[in-house]
Image (cartoon, rainbow, N blue to C red; front, side):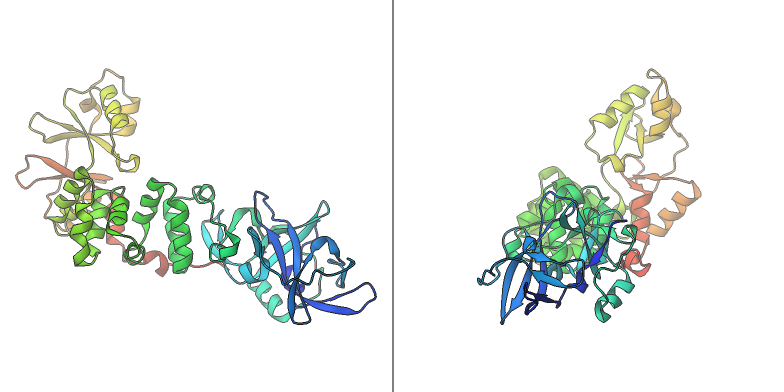
Amino acid sequence: MTEILHLSTFLRRPIFDSAGDRIGRVQDLVARLGDDAHPPIVGAVIRIEGRNLFVPIRKIGGLSQGRMTFEGRRVDLRRFERRPGELLLAEDLLARHIINLVRGRLIIANEIEIAEIDGRWEVVGVDPGRRSFFRRMLGQKIGQRVKVDAIVDFASIEPFVAHVPSARLRIPYRKLARLHPAQIADLVEQASHEEGEEIIEAVGLDRELEADVFEELDTTHQLEFLESRSDKEAARLLSRMEPDNAADLINEIDQDRRLPILENLPVEQQAKVRQLLSYNADTAGGLMNTDFVTVPATATSAEALEAIRTSSVPAESVHAVFVLDEEGQPIGAAAIAPLVRARESELALSVARTRLTYVHPHWDLHRVARKMSDFNLTVLPVLDEENKKMIGVITVDDLLEELLPQGWRREFGMSAVEE
């Protein structure tokens, strides 16, 4: 079993020279972040005669025995200065928020775990448990053994270190991209504003992911992060959001910024958003999405599937293909699975649900919810008041999100920081 040592047991411990005289006290351990799954410990910050000095780890003996000794010939008397890529384990990590990438949650690093692996001291994990917090507060002997599976592997976590200018590190996008946008949004909502900005900056390398995350944020956080962006930057972000979500957010922005942001949207997106803004937000018209896939009544199943493939409608919004008659009225809704199973030459209408129900844009959300519930629908077409044209669709996930109270994740403990 690998011997795991606790960072807290090294802090403020004395260090002795070869003659047994005390020369200083350990202030911190220094690790180097890079491509290693477990960052190597490169040295310690030692307090000697009122100065913080750096001592390389190779010159420190007895790390696991409880009595630390300086094994070099002389100490470099230059004051310690952090180099790029270096992390102070106590100052930067201990008792701070860290992202657990496996569960997509924030944890508090109540303890940092280190171990000697193949002759090299490495940071192997963090312990978010309360027992580690009390151990850190009350102290314990160096070298206590703990099970490796009792801690969170450091390779599966990501520290917030951008607040340390000299570290010159940012959260890698490739790690966050493993998480669902809703999980990333939860992280932002759990974190401080500074930490949230780090996460938004990291996902900003992928504009689509950034927009998806932004859509998942509650309104308070959306407005908070838009405050620091120019009208053009805000419009760039909103242009990648679903039109209905973009319209909802514009409604929440300060009055003097609404028109400038709206005018900076691309022409096609701007037209969709303007249409949605003409409806009350608490109605079917305000909730609907104006992006949907349609085919004529003569289309085959193969042509309907091709319409999906060539459509710019986001995949998560394509619940069905709507079959329209010559006047643009929906006469059927073909779900994806029946289309895939049908013969290519078979008409899409033949596998579609033809007894369609629909709503009008002025209907309130509770009336829409009853309609979707009564007919067991995941997507519902919205027709204009004259029943002549299909103008949008309402999906069950959008309806559910609208009906749930603001901040419901936090109220039900879904975005709480783990211990």
